[in-house]
Image: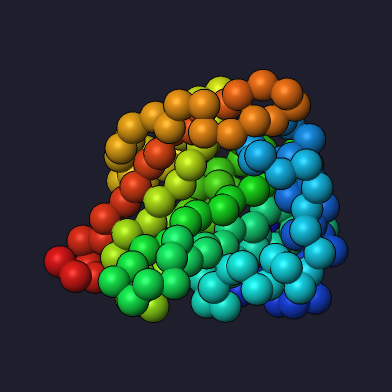
Amino acid sequence: MDWAIEAMLDSDWPAVREIYRQGIDTGDATFQYEPPEWAEWDANHLRHSRLVARSAGGLGGWAAISAVSRRECYAGVAEVSIYIAAADRGRGLGRRLLEALIAGSEAHGIWTLQAGVFPENAASIALHERLGFRRVGVRERIGQRDGRWRDTVLLERRSKVVGA
């Protein structure tokens, strides 16, 4: 299948939401139990650097970033969200989306990207590390999901372009 990495359109939300739901259903992608409504998701993600993997058959994945703080000193620090449709995992879409997200974020002055990933999500950790993220540490028992405490691996990537 021929995939194009493109800017996310507001009209992509139903497909983006469904891909998000598929990630939630794995139990190893997020602490969320349900995807938010559009207005909440839109308000919590930066308007730039919202991407989708699009083919003639629809969307295969999406990536976006959110600010980690409203404080000016952290204006160039953002958290990565990346989700691939269940049917399209293992096809290289995650790498293509994350590469494009890194480039787009740097074009908008982001100097640090971070990600919090459940340790059980080995594919996501490996993807981030292949693209220059490093493990900062493990946030032990940071939150509960399904009645059990979960750790997250904190990864970060410092731009070699912005603020170098």
